[in-house]
Amino acid sequence: MTSINLDQAHAHLPEIISGLNPGEELMIVAAGKPLATITKAPQKQWPCAAGTAKNTSHWMAADFNAPLKL
Image 1 (spheres, rainbow, N blue to C red):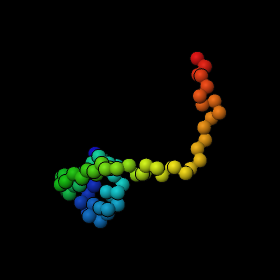
Image 2: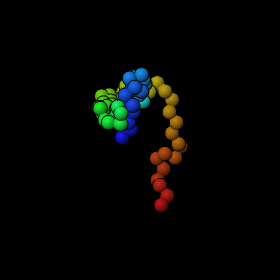
Image 3: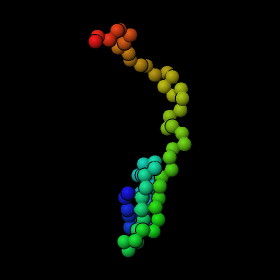
Image 4: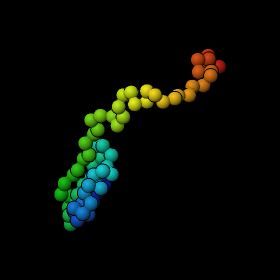
């Protein structure tokens, strides 16, 4: 778990939180003693919506359906 000083957290909290991965914990300490633990919440939805690649071109190998050589 990563820890950060209270003064640093106070000065840069939005940047610190945006840099965390979902579920990652960050401990805030003052004078070497833990004060609080912040955990970034998991995403509630995927970053892309269904159907956004509808009109894009896709490439597929000519032998895609060919039997595998064992």
